[in-house]
Length: 344
Image 1 (tube, helix red, strand yellow):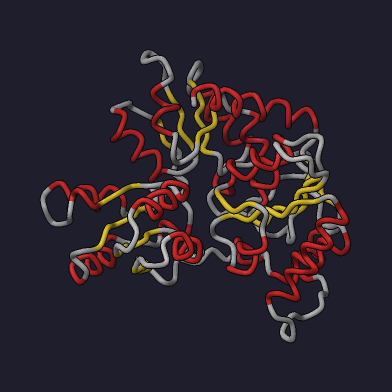
Image 2 (cartoon, one colour):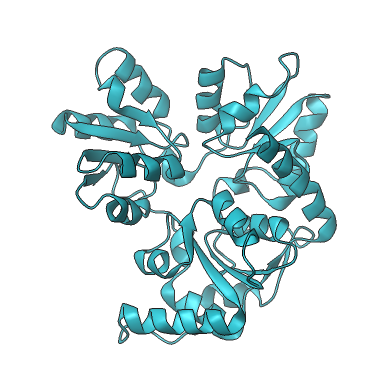
């Protein structure tokens, strides 16, 4: 099964999976951005559709989107619109989340094969087996999971609110935290709660190491370090900051949304950014006077980048590829998301 893809019982999609990854589209080599963007906007108006783009998408897609942000933010913004269709430029679990939160809308993704290595580390059957080993435990699942896993969860969290969600669980309850082990370790450190943590990881964030960030920080002592909590280096960076090897006041563990906010609040500074490199485009737009350095220029998600400008145009022209979570699973998955939103 492709990374991040659910089984046929979890979600359905129009168009074949094989064709989604290899469909024929008109090459855009002879088109400029304005010409392409005009057709995207025209088709979207005709379809009563909106285009949403995750922060890791390629620049053209970020620039043409009605909304750019993280996965939950995009789904909530889409739900608040009058659009009949959502073209979600992200990965498959994100389109599923939009389907869960927008049951009255049709949700499409430009390439069905755009999965997620982190979401693929656990499925519903594995989660049910883990729950059986810890009867009565509260399951806190990161939003980077499939609809089926969300449906088996008690609470959903994002990277920005994970600590707050965990803190809402009664102290006498066991907590199963999944699937990202680095985010889990970060939450455990911040909250002081003893968590059972699933040993999953994002292949991109896990590949950003402490040595390269330390070397960059040493070479740029005036730079702020913006580190996503999915990074395997997060704990060691905080340790180095605590012993004075890094600037403690400028070593920040932040979600993508928090990085965007931080950029707006600190114009003209120098930054080392430890997350998928696609976010640099938006960060530079939000703070054009800033000096932005990738912690690792190879930190590129192959799945995010499967959504190309050609494929978005093809999806809008043909009305493909729809992602629909069956009602029973969507209802079960929506409940832990709503509990999270009640926490704040």
